[in-house]
Length: 356
Ligand code: PLP
Ligand code: COI
Image (tube, rainbow, N blue to C red; front, side):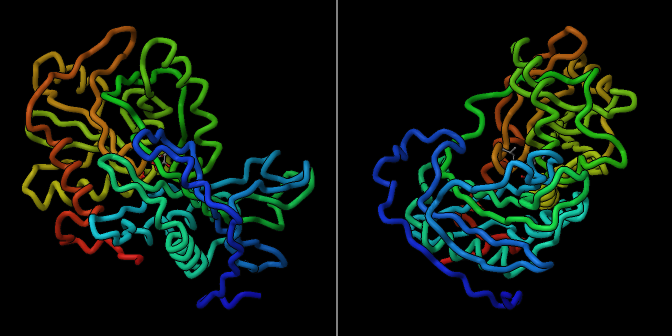
């Protein structure tokens, strides 16, 4: 059994590196993977055997509960490199804490901090050369936990795997995003798992998102499941709205992911004297603001998406375009947060962690 405060990680290196095959100037999102991964098993009631192995398939029995009951959670993070090859993480403890919030809700075992942080740092040291430092690219980090335990009984598994895999990645969206405000389907409900990063939350979005894509939109903005009158968040981003010079975002809840980018953007905006409001936003308020010209911007915020401007939204068969304005809050806040992440500015909030 591993000592869960100071862990020893067994490292098996890959025979060859694949790095020479990668076109770092044309990276898409999450399609190529680095040479190694971190794995740790939960067996006999404890996390054990933390190891780094070559990146490879995971072999599971057909009766593994992940396949049947969807006990699966994940996190999304990035590593950044500055001009001097220093490697940084952004608020990693927040991801660690959120993983355990998700684990608890999905009746999965919580992970000790040392396994998450030491596993991540060791893997990063090994894969340092894979971190892109071109504008807009980064090393996307995907920590995840799955139920490997077997049996068709609909109950929590008795064994789990925690894995960290890396994917050098370019932008999640290319260009501005046009969104459909959902009026029929729901992503989550009170008392449900919307606040968790559970795999099933994303599976449930694919069908309505495909319907929206068929109509020419790239993403759905979810509304509350009860009335569909209030906006909540997008498929992979929290949403910000600028009305006149006030930056609005909705409060997190049972139904909404507590985004690390969202809270960072709010903190930066407040520190810079931008007026912010965290409150419910009615779709009818957006439409009214669009019609009277006070709706200046909408943007999404998330690790993968960073800050992604929205070009317009559809609702009940009608499209509403956002104005083309200069000096947007979105562009300014994106620069501020990425400058902190990539060590181009000072870090007054203490969010940046140097790994090596
Ligand atoms: N909302 C959802 C549903 C997400 O999947 C994400 C991405 O992680 C976010 C919001 C943004 O969260 P964060 O900024 O922590 O990446
Ligand atoms: C992230 O932003 O890291 C996410 O987890 C979103 C993901 C669905 C790509």
